[in-house]
Length: 232
Image 1 (cartoon, rainbow, N blue to C red):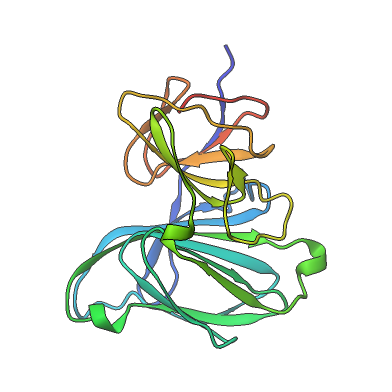
Image 2: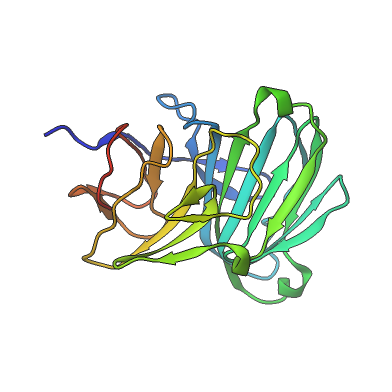
């Protein structure tokens, strides 16, 4: 029987500035993108102690969007449109650069004197050609605004797009985005992955998992064969 897994991508370590290192799975030599997703960065979990600098200094973007969410910790986003937004676990920051934006991501001042854990994901998304020169913008969706579905064997949060009969409040302009789903699957149980887009991938931030019985290590991005609905 053919494998449901099409590719396995192992991330490389990248420094985003200020000593802030991430595991970068996309782009990879064998896989430059998945649909419109051109960068996939996983940071942490790390223990931030007083005096350490994990700030991402001001830097520009153009012609794309960035999607950020946290599992632990907090980050303060600032950008050249005047937005200042703190992001905490479960919330979503969606920044659209369009014709150009400058932003930074810094540690909150109220956490500067105490240790805390920092853990999250950031994805970069190519904009449709007609939106590449649009005005920059920013969206924040609080954690309690992100829909959560409780299935028999799992809890699923729908960060972007729609699945399982619910839709994220994040306004994504590209019709090729599909959906971004956060699965918390009970040990020893399984849930079926829906066909939310032609190109699909899975990534575990903390524990190994199985796809149709094949083991996948944490920190490994795996792409799913088109037309299949595997069990996770």
